[in-house]
Image 1 (spheres, helix red, strand yellow):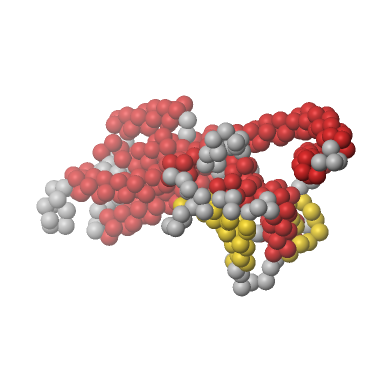
Image 2 (cartoon, helix red, strand yellow):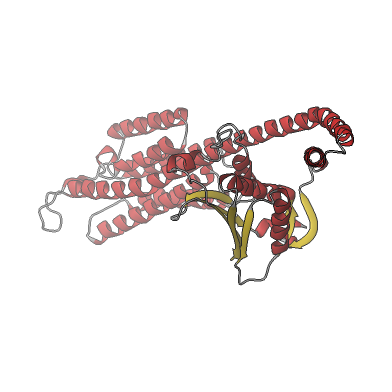
Length: 420
């Protein structure tokens, strides 16, 4: 389950507070063991307040209700309050661990908007300033010899505080920043998918309008071609050409009819073996492109899964086959296998290939290498269709020449059990 940045940041604040509690408890026990007098009840009260905050945070993380910015800000206010209580009883501004005020402020700077950051910054500065005048002093903080090694206790505490703060900030704050960067990346991906959906909608609208507009001229062409064929019955060669023209017109009409007939009809719910589906797509394509020899190899040790076939998947494969045949009209190689829940479908042509620069641009809308004969939409639409099912399409140059188009498609969403 994908967690929101607020949930992840509150989770990390929980662990950051746990580390602070463990550190304060350990340093308190150490100083008490060394015989340094400390206000143990006051320190225990402050640490207990942090533990209560963490219990509240733990229970909140188990609640599915969304976590807001204000809630995270209130959590940080609780940390500042417990720190203020702790420092008041342990030397105030002279406490070597007063740097801990920067922890909630750093978390706010990473995870909250500017208004919360400046509010907490003002509060931290105010509390620190009040501690200059109002605190219970600890005279032993500046002992000149700590355990006989000639080190000022206060300076030793400052050094230890710096080491711990550096580690805490590097560990926790870096992960909070990583969460926000990941969130920005996901937003950018969602925005890109939305733009692709808008493009697909625009293309679908244009396709529907084209199907409507082309119906009349195609019907007229079919009538005229039929009349011409009747008038040229004594010319076998011309009659044969007109017959081919009629067949192509009927094919265009069939394509336009299928656009409207299959609109909104995504799946064929009758189960079909994957190998039968691929063979059917190739057989239909061979009938359309009889001049291109297709060497088809099925190389899989696992039994063919039963899938709920999708019309768009077949069309995507046809688009890739068309591109390969356009680059290599005489012959193409096709291989397929399924393994560990994935379909791997490779098409190799024997054309001139493409440079890495062209390969990077291939698949973008309206980019074509066919010099005026292509619209630049076949590969683009195929990529969108496969990506919709979690797959991907890649192009690479073959060492012996030509281009290999590879499809990697997870079959989980196409299995018969998943489709029903």
